[in-house]
Image 1 (cartoon, rainbow, N blue to C red):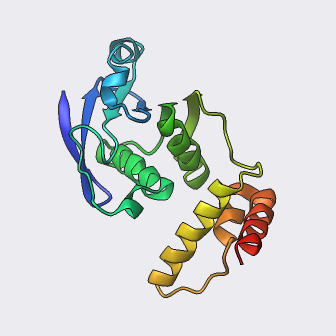
Image 2 (spheres, helix red, strand yellow; image 1 turned 90 degrees about the horizontal axis):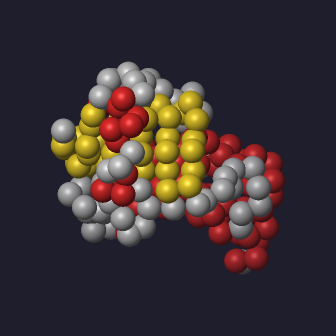
Length: 178
C-alpha cells in the first residue's frame, strides 16, 4: 500500500500497512524505504501499523533543492507529520544509519510523541558532548529564530535538546569559531 503523504511542506512516498500502534521505519544513507521490505509483514502480523517512508531527498519522495531543507530538525518534523497524517499521537521508531540520527533528534524534540527508539548502527548522542552536532543544532535554531524575528541567545536550542553539557559544548565550539 504505497501512499504519498503530505507533511512539512513536502510529499513523502511511504509504504503503509496494518493497523494498531504506529511503528515508523527510517532508512539510512544512501538507501530508501526498500531497506525495510523484509520487516514489514512481521510487524503487521504482530499487530502494528507500519509506515516506511522514503525520507526527503530519497526514492519517490520530494527532493528540495535547498541543502538547508535537510537538517535534522526538519527531518524530525517530517516524521511527526507522517504520524499526524496517519492519525497517531505516538509512535515507535526503528531506524538505521542516518535514520537513526533523525530518530534520536526526533525523540529529543518530541519526547511526548516517541514511545521508543530502536537505532541500528548509531548510538544516541543526546546529553553527550557532540561538538559539531551541537553546533549544527544551535546554528539551525538561531537562524530559524532570526528568520521568525525572535532574538533568543545562541545555544539555547542546544540546551533544550542536549542538556547543559550540550549547551556548554555549543558555547565552546562557537567561541572557537570566533
